[in-house]
Length: 338
Ligand SMILES: [Zn+2]
Image (tube, rainbow, N blue to C red; front, side):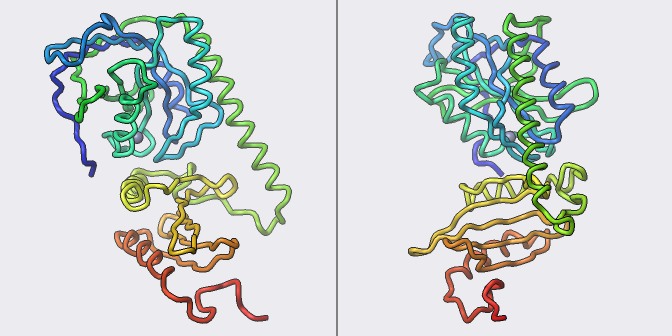
């Protein structure tokens, strides 16, 4: 499914993690059916260890994390943190605790059941560790795979600057200590405010739109592929779709409609001097709705498809037919004569 898989690292990495970190993640995840995450904070001991040495030993400590911020975008199958918020909050932390570094990231797949990093995750982490703006030569990625009432289950991965492979850290490399960072009160207060902003933003939008709509236009209770009726089978279909979009339309973004609660992929395709916006919506558990809109905002093509194994081929054909010369008004539902 993904090109790169974890390899055995020649680097002896020892990770120490404050137990409170997992508890904080757990509290957050219990409240959420979407992917969650944050920027891991900590430090590296013996920072002089050089990555060229094949016997290198690196010791990293994770104390806490910065939450994903008020403008977080996420669904069951994606997370797009508020990078601006995380960056600015980190600048404050740096001044309060100069020994603290950004040491990696965490996110969860508890919402979709994927127990490995996705291709998008892996590509993003290689980019992060090799960024000139990243201080350390090592980048830790923690993936939460499962959640139960009392704990979380996850894996730590290590990415190293300049290397082509990454590794999954064995259990023996990880030591969990009783501990709470001096920054934790501050970080949790920030998270509380972020969450409040996420909620008020969401609710006021819904209210504003509801009052403008006639009663008949209101959606009935959202059915499949919404937060209210979510199951593992649907999630695995969503994951397949995410991997497929990643390969075929890497610019496609998944968003949940504020009012309908339904997920849609949105992207653009261009042919010659024509650009179309494409939307692929999960209408219900059996049905996808595809729509192409031209530059003037007119829907030029609409197609309902079944949510089955042929859907990816059908999306491709739909895109292909956009390049064909339009015949009459056949495909244009908005151009009928009255
Ligand atoms: Zn992921």
